[in-house]
Image (cartoon, rainbow, N blue to C red; front, side, top):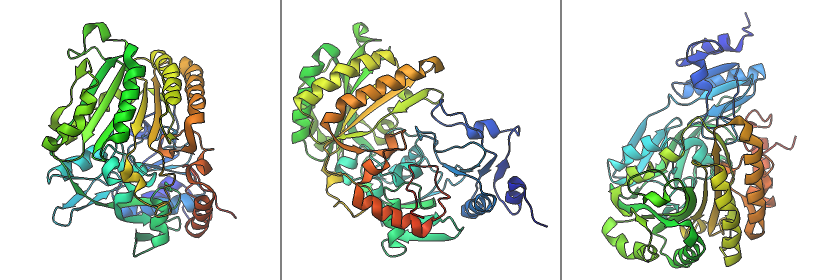
Amino acid sequence: MTVTDPAAALRQGFTGQVLRQAQPGYDEARQVFNAMIDRHPAVIARCADTADVAAAVDVARDHGLVVAVRCGGHSVAGLSTCDDGILIDLSGLKAVTVDPEARTARAGGGVLWGEFDAATQAHGLHTPGGRVSTTGIGGFTTGGGYGWTSCKHGLACDNLLSAEVVLADGRVVRASEHEHADLFWGIRGGGGNFGVVTEFEFRLHPLGPTVLAGLTMFPIERAAEVLRGWRDRADAAPDELATAVVVLTAPPEPFVPEELRGRPVLGMAALYVGEAGRGVAAVQPLKDLHPVVDLIAPVPYTAFQAALDPSAPRGFRSYWRGEYIRELSDDAIDAFLADAVDLTVLGAPLSQMVIFRIGQGVAAVPDGTTAFSHRDARYLFHPICMWADPSDDSRMITAARAFASAMRPFSTGASYLNFTPETDRVRDAYGDDTYARLVALKNTYDPGNLFRLNQNIRPSH
């Protein structure tokens, strides 16, 4: 007898947990990072292994259900959940296996970066990962993956050696430079368009467990002067120096001078990607800008990786952007500060306006090597707007979009899709030639566009 109920069909031989509305655990399982996203899947498949993922893909295809794939749930666009379809939850795929001799690690598709860092740091190794430790490795890596150490070691996707992928037809394949090389090219920057990655194999690099890293703060009145000084130093810095600036609300912490608490300040973050003792000279030019708060010191790498976690709590409404800036000119700095302070105040205390120095580790990988494109930018502009009251949605989103528009004259015109909520920026992320190649790949691996709840590459037929 044919089973027409997708939940019932999925339960046949399924190892994990199948949840429907009103069942215990359903509401918790459907929640994602961005509180603006409130969706109700018809079925949640909490997978325990790759076979479960393949079964969920088969049920979704056979029943005509939209598919959402969730690892950490950090998609600001809410692409890791859906209404009425099937949510494939990878959180049960948690295994991390490290080979310290080969300097490689295999990680299940449900692993979070904090978990991956803990496993690899036990051997003094790492790969560039998310700057918030609760970010899932899956969406981060397939979307490119800028981490603190990308300035030296490239993107997360540049360090991917192979991946186990469940395809739209239910087949499970291994993609690498030697097997399904076209698919391997596509999942390194092409997002979740071609299948569900259930295991990642990464190249690892020595770092830690102690690194020279931390945050400094400056009064906002010095922001224009300090930003110019930071730009000049960042442009001249070695690739081992990861750094960023941010306009944020100073927290009510003992290390913050009382007169700055609760006020907008200019922050500066730094990490030396190497032995802590060797980083002193590289970091000193930043310290020479004379911050009023200087927390740059030897710290565990895992602690620095989790340092931004308190500023990115779940349960708040979020709108971000990710725009590339080729050069940080004086005019770009002035435009940034003209809106950054006002928008930070508007979204206090959680909103932050960030500029990351990208570094040459990303540009060193030739365009076309992976689907990830536009590697020539030196900076990434990343406004993070977060607020609690739904009545503020319109004004916060409008203000953030206006900020991005004001910075557009200084941008390359390309977008970083991991930080982009709109789904109309896909072509901007790739350019015409790469986009055409991605469409051809979509035609091969997912011609029916089963995996469409993403920054979607639409098949041509």
